[in-house]
Length: 195
Image 1 (cartoon, helix red, strand yellow):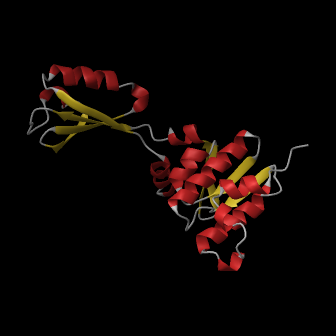
Image 2 (cartoon, rainbow, N blue to C red; image 1 turned 180 degrees about the horizontal axis):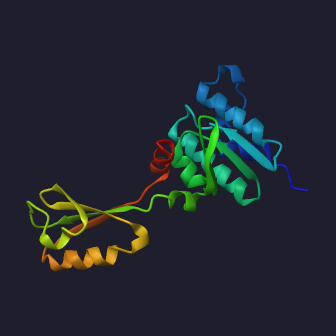
Image 3 (cartoon, helix red, strand yellow; image 1 turned 135 degrees about the horizontal axis):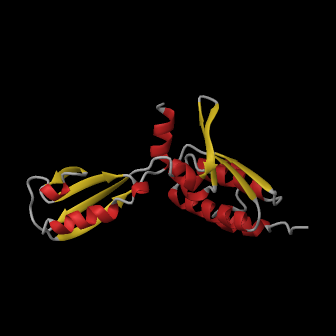
């Protein structure tokens, strides 16, 4: 039998310590939401269903709540989260279902779902000013962003990054900075719901 979490632990975890003896009617909207979440946690449920738990709450509570929820999950509690905050779902969830107009249009492990879009963007910032894409990079989907920056889109599955870096080296330009952008859950959501 699992031990029930102490009310003090939940109160502390949700930042309610200084409000523990205040009538809930006198609390702000964000504090009332914290109390509702604490009430859901007090009986140590094996499955915790959270429906938009961070809507309208401040950044500190959001972080406190997610830290506590992650800890509960590590201890064996199954968490079912509904949210419109896709970055939170991506960070917190092992598996994700995407619902569009009441229908589940995708359901899979988070990693696999994000892998649907097989693309990545490499941005290269050079020390030198450039006014056009060097010949060595024209075979790629390259775009001149600024006078010293080029973005190249490529498919992750094709392992094109080595070929791109070799071609960049052949330009003779000095790389000042490299950065990459990968698709996130919001990109996947847009892709799936636009079809």
